Length: 239
Image (cartoon, rainbow, N blue to C red):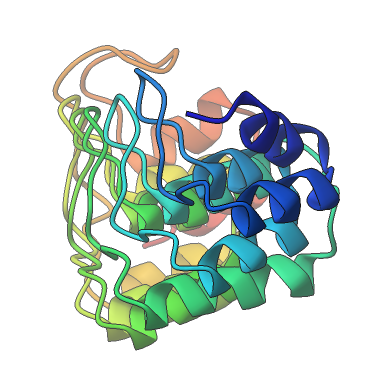
């Protein structure tokens, strides 16, 4: 157990982490919730410490309570708050963790994979690493939302294409019946709507339950109208 090492990872004190490792503290020692030095550094945004942990034998398969691994920590941390390290530095850590065998399809207790989080937070470089490593683009979270739904909702045409190329289903629905085209319609991005429709997305599909501020029975066009997205509403109305 090493509070000094954990605190060093949490507050960016790499000298403290190094000194603890040099005196023989196990890099993989974890607290009661499963937090390790690697996971802490990943969450708090200290890429240099995370890379040091990897170089000193950190277990990339370690998970904290809730099923979060280092890939989740980086994808979530970069998206949720400004990182204390450069994006390039964390992309390097992420790629190294994948190379060392981190579980690319590992899911949290909410069914969220690293790919799901990377698409939710718009982290395109992480999406590429995961897909190149064979991440399953079709895995849905517990509520049925998919990585493709996230990317479409974020109007990220490049990621949408990449996910479809990796086998993502353009008509896969969440528990309330929302599909990627609903997300694209609400984003107001016609190009993403066109990409999905050209790939076979069904513009007539209706939601099965009220959710996200929309009534049951809402089509992608209805979603665009509800959100005052006139460009996507006009496009979908003319299909």
